[in-house]
Length: 87
Image (tube, rainbow, N blue to C red; front, side, top):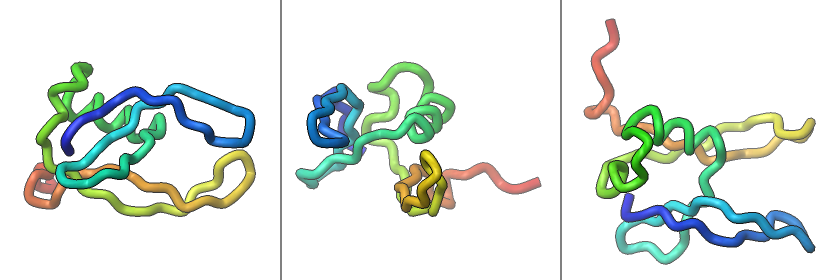
């Protein structure tokens, strides 16, 4: 992960919101952070956004129900070697 910037996004025509967008080293496109991903970053790296910079993460998709509609969403995780061992 390279950095997080707050940007104006347009989730629907005529609607603008300011959201955190995560950028990756060497990539131009960012990932708009959902509340689930924001909570994961806070729980893993703390409240200071800069603490998550340069950290290794993984991305995977999950099918979820949002507002009654099934959607595929991107979920942030930790690489297997960074996870604590299972009990």
